[in-house]
Image 1 (cartoon, one colour):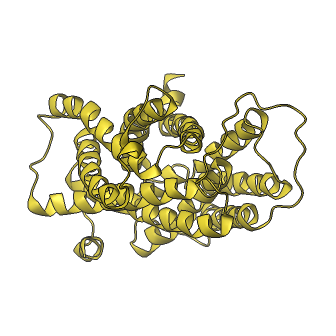
Image 2 (cartoon, rainbow, N blue to C red; image 1 turned 180 degrees about the vertical axis):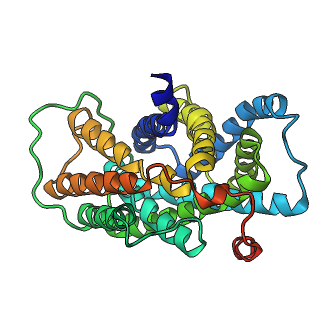
Length: 343
């Protein structure tokens, strides 16, 4: 049993990550409906994460933490810009125009985008003459087809005869607009794919995962504070009451930007960047089910069919990926590849 658990430890951890993301998506959606500004939320979330993670990183990794050079800080700055400044701000901004079910469905495109980028940067290989190589390609294509189906085909509404267990009246600025929210969500997915790819290179030269998580959060907090201060002029939007807004910021900081990112870094190091992204369909299903039965969010036939297609493609990809070590774990990588990602 111990051997089985050790073998599937990355799978179990990534499954728990998706459960954590499900809770995050639902409570942030509720907080935004309550009136919390998405960019203010990101700012507080990153500050809280930095304060919580710093003592653990300082104490537990003081003997293994590499020296922080100017070049390494530049990589961390870019990681924070991609993973926090762009990906998080765009993603949660799109949540005000769409719904938790929609944005989690669109997040599944990160796996396909990361796989393509990993191929271009030689982090992934595809043996088209072998069954597992074909499984990775067709799994990616099938998942992408399911995502497109969920995004562009609604179909009829599935009737829900139950009353919502939780009901929050949306504020005036919350207006569902898929045409406006979709491009923002797609842009956040592209930034997140680049974030996962760059992680792989940075981890080879800065293997202190707790410290790296803390640095990304701290630099991201500075970046998003400057950005938010320029666009949010109402001081009232910065105040957090003893309500869902405060609890959402605390949960997002400790789990969303702290523990979850640390687990992803560990799984990225063990299994590669594509492996980290292919579990996202799980949170899509969980969010859809909870939103439908507890929050009485509208659920369409197209979303259900698309979700099934995505799951089939994901597990086909996982079968093709099984027992393959990512090329990024090798001791040496071609220097040309390093230059590509750094320039």
